[in-house]
Length: 182
Image (cartoon, rainbow, N blue to C red; front, side, top):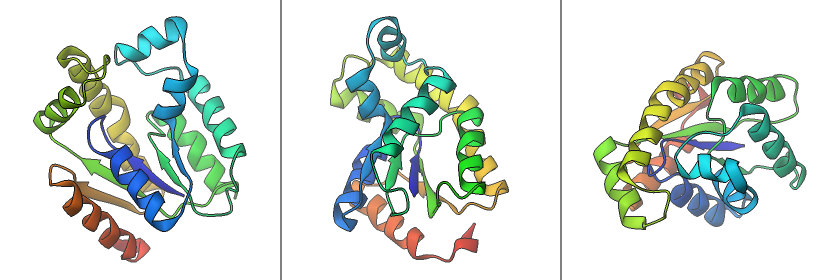
């Protein structure tokens, strides 16, 4: 499993999908599944940039993982986003339920993220929502990167303010590095 992490607009989906396509791997995006499956009040909260509950997201990820052969390599985009979700995932890895190749952590500035998200024009991409997403990322998601590193998981910090092709080349280069490259 190769996990793509980063704030919305850092290029997770673009880069994760490209890697999956070029390596012929399944690409599992929690954001895509949520946009397909979530409605009502939960959908309104999501559009406002709020994260859904850990147990709801973990249950969704479990359903997604049942659709593929987790003994084979795959790309997971947008999970985990909280320490609770990361703890669940690390437990799955520890107990041999999942195998981790590494984490691609796409690091982007708030300015870059704001420009990208406003340009894509989705209804949930307004400046206040983008600010909320960036704050949530800094507060709840970024500590997961440290937790993965502390657990001995290979985490590759990639500057995603660069043009997409340079970001992709940096990802390929990172994945070729030995696991102890942190």
